[in-house]
Amino acid sequence: MTATGYKTLRFKKYISFFRLRFGMGLQYRAAALAGVATQFAWGIMEIKVFMAFHNTDPNSFPMTFEQLSSYMWLQQAFLAFFMAWLMEGEIFNCITDGNIAYELCRPVDIYDMWFARSMGTRISAGLLRCLPVLAVAAFLPEPYRMHAPSDPTTALWFVVTIILGLTVTVALCMIVYMLTFFTISPMGLRLMFSLTAEFFQGAVIPLPFFPRQIQNITELLPFASMQNVPLRVYSGNLAGNELIRAVLLQIFWIFVLTVTGKLICACAMKKTTIQGG
Image (tube, rainbow, N blue to C red; front, side):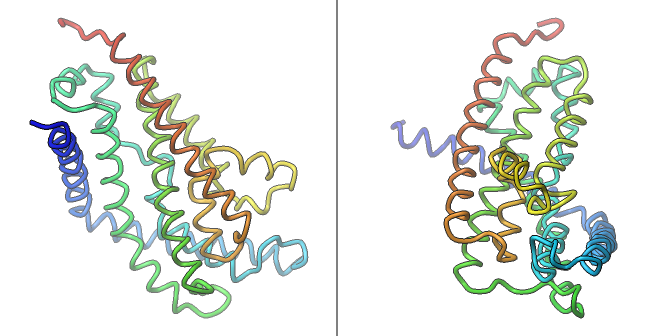
């Protein structure tokens, strides 16, 4: 077999893992419907909270209320793409109970396999939930309505940045998986990562609402390259040179996080000891 044929075969293996997890995720329609109802309620509640502050002092808002509404609905629609706590318990159990031995018997790279699985899980969960949320939010009355992108270029940048943001999210989760090899229980890692990522990616408060000095530092962190960038691009709050800088940071963090994850994985594979093996 030629080198090209071997690489193609390897690539098809990981596509198969992606398709498997994607197909499994699409089967949970009842859970998706329940999630959509929850996200509608949560989205309206968040908008009302910000509306109270906006009515008190509109000039202190770093975003227009139209931009904020679009940001909130997109956050709810694509929650599965970026929520830091959505990690596969099956992978954690595999590491902690010794079933990693079966995974290591597969003729695939374990990092790439789990990466493909994680992407499939998030995309399937996101697609099931995003369409109903977006469809309804687009027809809500003002000021709750989600607005369309200002122009086709903005829409294109949104697609590019949401793909990059999703990749950053999965790469960060992969580091958490790999660090679990060096711990007794993954709960501490998961909790610390989830809380940190949720806050610094703008899931609690959009980053433009942070004090300027803190925002300048926060935007350099990998967490800001998750949902913060695509949601602000769509709403029109991020454009021009700031947009180019944000996209370059997304690409930079994808490279750094992937390399870091692979290095930790390689170290973990050398030190892994399985009882009886």
